[in-house]
Length: 577
Image (tube, rainbow, N blue to C red):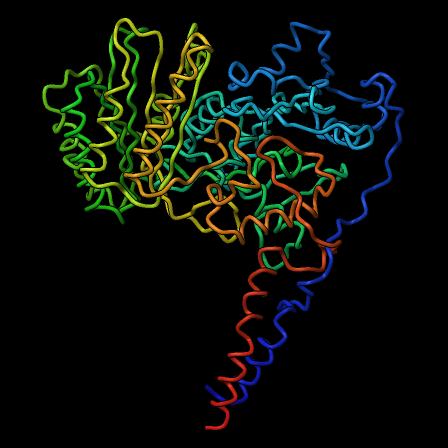
């Protein structure tokens, strides 16, 4: 290295609290001043106040508890029957437009209501609503914001947060486009884009939120930010919001009103889809899982295959327990000749003495497989009446388990499957639909994880809950022992998690957690957007977003600062040579 070059490098490192653009990484955090807004009297009728704050018109609807039937339907969530006390907001603001959102947020800020946000109501923890018994709170419902525009020239979709995955999948299929999503048809896009969106095709293309290239969001001060993929020309505020909203802690940052999604063309890829359902046979299932573990280990680095296992204990409702394996093999058209059906056939054949209930083996457009075969429960909830109550467990890990470890998990499942006299349903899922992700621009945790396990227990009587909690604890111990890790995610969170004490299970590093707390302190210092799993407010001073580097960048700069003295010493030795 030339001496002049080394001097420049050392000078840069010795002053590394300043970014490449000259921004001070230690500068205080402060949002740009919001536009002036009307003031309201909080005792006035809510709709009148919302209209005043919305420039004269509120296009949505206010639903109060006295509107019994409407209110009951409006606050309903996936987790309401189990966590019924989390679905009691002071009122619900059903939104039609972005100006409605701004009005609702300004009203909440002026009249000291906490805010929960609902797009599809699929929260297992029931945190897309709130409990006004604890403190006054409002539920902002964006489920009616269903704009869905497709540009086949750019392969981009502009989607409102109220779209459900099934109507998004249908629109994609209509235009010969595809993007990876989860499997539950009625999940709202607004929540899905903040929590990941894991499904069969994630191993090929990444999570749903990695298809997001931009979004519009209303912040706690009522301002609207048009957030784009970070670049050299984007601001600190833009980059921090992009990072935090996409995987940080859903519902903590503001109300997303519009999402820009990048799709791929169906006809650019070869795609095979398999789906096999077999009557449950413990020995056969164990053989299948052992074979799968061997195949997964041998082809771990090949992202063209993916599998999604489901074990359904449905004997009380359907007369049978069964195991299902969905599998996909996807590659650019030029690699179509590499496809070998025996890759999956060998796994299916390992289930000896297993009666076949269903078998699908097709090569077709990915969007057709997503819309017509993969999405679950288009016509209603995932669990039928009277199995209304549920318990859940979830684990995620960075390594595929070997055959012996999968056998231990299968054995534990077998001990709990229902018989003809049982009064519960049980669903186990194991997915390899994970692709190593770039964690630099999106905060979605554990970017290196490769496997996830979910267990759901559905039952008719809440008094049965202790039985399932006990089994869940036993199964979790077996799963963690055999996976070696117990990573959690926001979409799979259950029971009563406390992010402040459990952050290490939800984030791979304290640095990421502290970065997100810093961003929360900047964009929502009064903690307007709050729920059981929302991001705590960090302790940072005021800082100008428009002139400072992102919080993530600032932490990276700080790391360089810690090694700068050593590099200066080393450089001085080199200069003497």
